[in-house]
Length: 207
Image 1 (cartoon, rainbow, N blue to C red):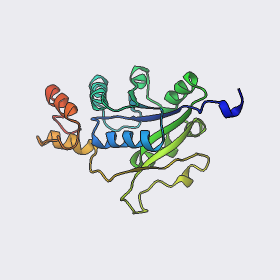
Image 2 (image 1 turned 135 degrees about the horizontal axis):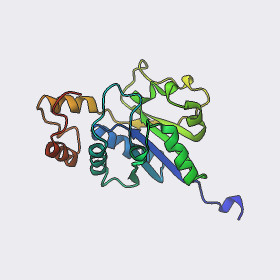
Image 3 (image 1 turned 60 degrees about the horizontal axis):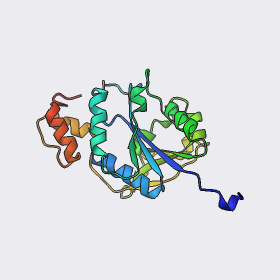
Image 4 (image 1 turned 90 degrees about the horizontal axis):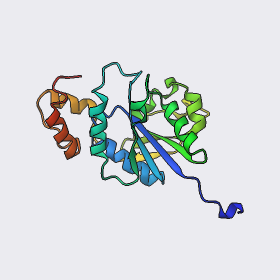
């Protein structure tokens, strides 16, 4: 078959994080990535052992259950527990290599929020990451401030593809703080996640 009849390469997104807990901005980022990056599938990957986190994470079984609830009705999103099942620290490069091994002809896209991007040049094997995947950093469309934005020149050999997000005031830190203070979070997390948190009495003390 000639090139004109070749099927286009599958586009596979990877969106990792602690998801402690998953919140509405995570969902908005995932939906935007699927639509704007024309992904065939987006792997949402909860971190196992976070080598870079200064605080202990909530038990992985709880975080995985909350992510599964949060993304249950999101087309083209699959919750991937590979990093939770993997022993040792969670490294994004290992996840990308595993996907590349399974689908060597696919185009991998690493999706992240701008807060994650600020430490990209310190990620484990970042040079190998940029060889395997396009990096897509979600920027809030209404944020016109240049300061604090990730500068692509910090990774001159990487390929970037932009991703725009609506301005959303939601963070896992805020959710945990509100819960520790006995305040409601129904406007910040999916209903199913709020019910799970209440049922299992999570985040009763500030982390």
